[in-house]
Image (cartoon, rainbow, N blue to C red; front, side, top):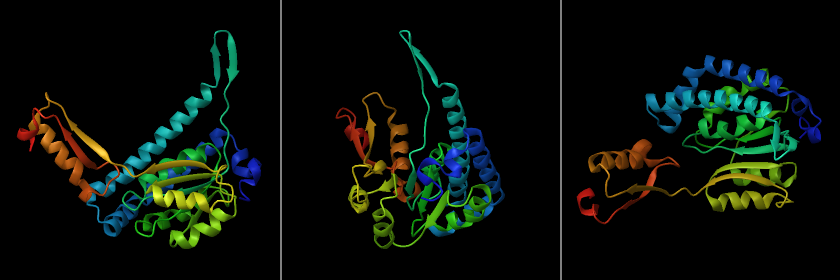
Length: 252
């Protein structure tokens, strides 16, 4: 909260390019410890070599895409419709409480963390009890690349750590991946829940849909991979399959 300082802190006061420079410096530092992060992802959450490396590399690609998008948005600030001119300026919201899941602790956490930082927000990262070791490896990099207090880490059981943190009322944005029951509880800890902005990914039940003209050999393989990859421990894993009645017997 001190680093945010109601929008007057060092980080929210920086220009977009200054914030981009810090994020790019972070990427350079993370690349230096890539092998360590990949190894920890393998051993702590039981990913194979390829999946652990892919999670890190996809995260770096996502950061680059976020930087490009932020720069493009800044260029597209002037709008004109039917002779009406407008200037669009994006401003930070405040302090974000950021939860990442245990199955993709690196990629999913950064999917909300990096855009928030680029826009000038400060963040508190709730490290998952399982899958959090990769984040411990990054702490020195954040300390080197960002002003004090911009990125903060909280570890421990959520039921012990979240009531006092959310209860301060100083969290402005909640980013959470998990169950709706847990998200509802975290929101209730905030003294002004109506003021809290939320970015939630909850209770995914993804469908595989097989149409009458589908290549059934291909559909069978893809549904199998989609439901069992990483032992099904993915938000995007196929949970339900809907097959057209005309091909249901052949598909099964």
